[in-house]
Image (cartoon, rainbow, N blue to C red; front, side, top):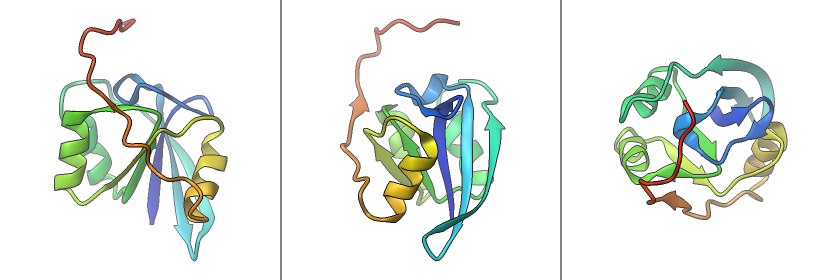
Length: 116
């Protein structure tokens, strides 16, 4: 299974679409067996869910995410876990142990400020 965590460095980001990139963890039998960093190819509406699906990602973890992205991930059969924070590796370990449960924290405020 592949789990992608939206990150700034090794910290789970609160803004999925504007993250620096994704820590992608490959897991087997609830253990992390490989990890690599995938730089974000940039934010365009609807692009990142398709991009991560094409990378073989099964689960995506983030602090928050817009409803449109959640819908696309759902259509692709990718599990979305929202409300995560802190260290990305710990978030994945918690997920694998059943301790990280999605808060359903969908960002609906389309007027919040983004720095480009």
